[in-house]
Image (cartoon, rainbow, N blue to C red; front, side, top):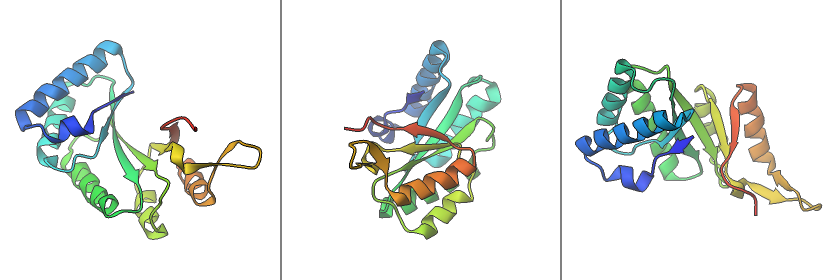
Length: 167
């Protein structure tokens, strides 16, 4: 999987977006990667969706999947990410090669926020290394709240991705 640099992408204009996506998609096709992981864009969702749709329509993405990454954390930014994701999903006309990755953070929001996401089809669940604690034997274990969320997502057949190594 390839991951787009969020700080770089946020400051790009539409034409720069097009050039950057062409480069990344071309490079992904050259390497034969399975998927490109992007964070939910905070601005310019219309332009971003239009660019992605043009790539899907022209078949430029080939078999490369696009994974939209959303951080599931207790913050104001999380509710904004929900709105940005929903807007992006509504703007995309081609949803066949677009998957959702929900990344669990150490500080999780209330259960009501979880019910929003459980209603979506979540293809991947990312678990950040800071979600793990060390048990009495020195092995990394998930907190009970994280384990409960993970069990719910595994019932949806989500693929688990570990974001970092445990210290």
